[in-house]
Image 1 (cartoon, rainbow, N blue to C red):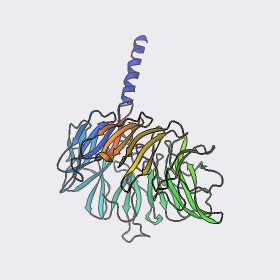
Image 2: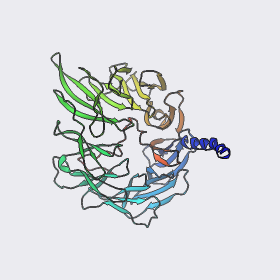
Image 3: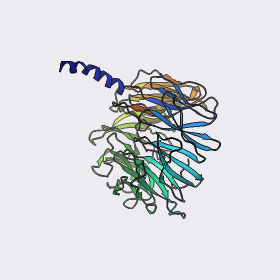
Image 4: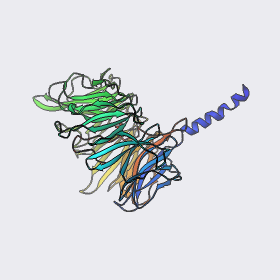
Length: 488
């Protein structure tokens, strides 16, 4: 027993070193503004920078395998090809290099590469292939038809959500139904039909698709439907709706998969029509609804993001929907639904984006930006981080006289990746809780754009960081517009 016990400290250290391996940041780099992009990787501590792919053609990364290989599309004059490369830039190998125009969509946890083939501008097919396949190995058809078949999201259970065109004459502007299928092509099933006029919103950790149907509840509103082939649909608009309903807006997920929604409308206050919003947290099947801002309120509040303990809310000018301007102030509510709101920040002027919400980190730090216009072309800009209880305010960046830094992503270990525009689109990183010292990640001229972040877990398996988006929301892919067709 003593001999075995002597190995325990070494085992613990080994596991901790694996778990604490810095996240890897994949980014595109161009030597000339607007030119073709090459693909790079760097660790969040600024070390181990490596070229993943460099050629006269543009490379764009789409995902990472569990053994830390990067899959990307190389767009040539003849169409797209798929390649795979080790995280240190070695072992570059073709994955799909046919005469077809192929574009990678993502990589599942089973190391299956999901990609589309463009036949015409209005006709695409959907396939998958193993990341370990040879270029001559056959692919697996996921959805192939004479009409359009488009990837929408990779679910948390590795099922592929896709849109399938089922009508040539649009139904109130809609042509697509939504389906899901395993990444090996098995067990396809319909999720939502075209006659429901669905608009894809997000993919939930609980294996449900969040979608919206036009109109006011109970016919319209927000819904969620299972994506595992056994279709069950639930309303996410099953709370009390008040006079002057405008919309039910999905805001995001908590880390445990609770759904954050604002029900917005126009209400008379002292005889005047006034915007207002009720904010709710609920399970992804519409159960256990909790209202965040109880009681009569005349604030135009919109939810922005949530942790399991806090909901972040913006208060906007009346008659503004939150897309046209920034909030006048930022607040946090306890996710339990009990307790008063806490003011986190207040706009310093009446200019449209004097204050803007920048995101909620995985550790729960609230990021926001303050802007002060000093001339027609110059601004003072500062980025801040604050705890959701209103404590521990930290200035992360401060820029005077010109463009500053904007959040592009987070890491698992509490760092914020900024795009620093004043230096020709560099990428820098800073701890969200301070000290406020930017570390360059990609300062080579001229353009550097974050692609995605991936991490390594205790078992040394790599995975794309699904909660590293600025708003803490993982849509699982780009939303599919009803019209026009989904662009590649």
